[in-house]
Image (cartoon, rainbow, N blue to C red; front, side, top):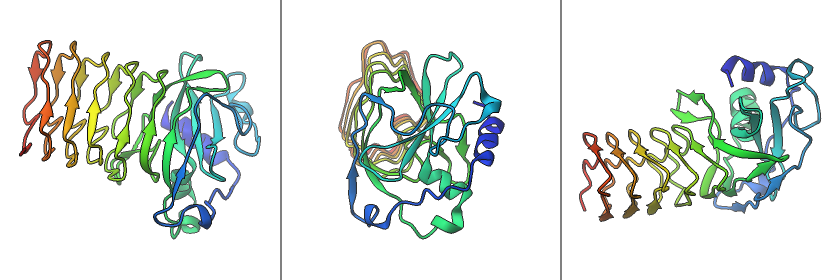
Length: 262
């Protein structure tokens, strides 16, 4: 989705306060989120959380905000993909508030979440996590920015994780990567707190910096069929001790294992 279309949607929204209740975001408190299955909580695609329609997007509505079960005010934005048969998770209400209602929410701590991404939204499979846009001020993807994630569960409908998706989330220590994933963007997990990772069987290339600076990462399993390990893809993973290099790997980029001291 083009940035100007997203901006048009956001600019047209009513000034709705999505600030989280202080009781839910006390520092150190974790909200465990269960959102598996077919998520359909607040309205339908093409409407915001209060059911306000955007006629300029009809007859092919593109957007829908959905409340995360287990929270009161944390919402995810899904957009219909170009194929009109699937959706992408591209934004969340906490980050939206920081972008457009900063003065109202600047003193509110980010929520800490253990998040399970839904496999379907109103019958549409979720095939991509991450926006095509990133915030260059902090160099992170919009989709999950401003959420302190400790654990994330990804359904096997997902094919693509976009670049800079979890970058810098030191709180993130646990994640599953289903074999359905065929693409992981650059710097996707850079600087996270993950300790081990099993790379999906359908992934052919580990891109630049994908797991770079994961200083607690000790164990990595790479699949047979992987052909490339990109530049600095595991650079500065100082505790990395166990990793296999499959025979299928044809190219290892410069600095792929730089400063892996263990």
